[in-house]
View 1 (cartoon, rainbow, N blue to C red):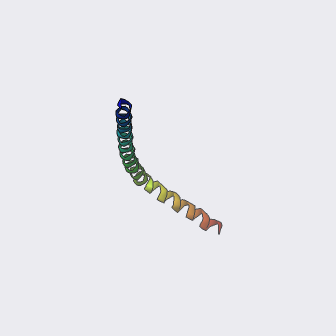
View 2: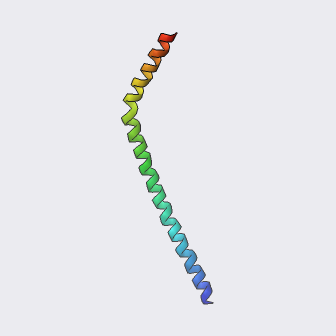
View 3: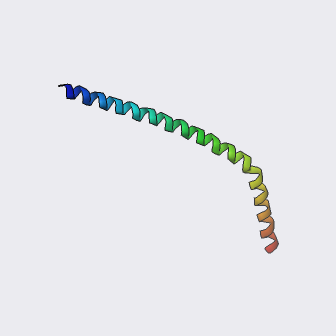
Length: 62
């Protein structure tokens, strides 16, 4: 009978660990999304300038 309680306790502990790790993954995903957005905004001016240069080069080549 004690092994049943031990198995249930271990299963519950395993679920707690999985839940904790799941929350950490969600928080890291949110932080990564914020960082990607911040970098996207930082490189937007350079991207626009590069795109304009590419268009100019293509226009010259005909």
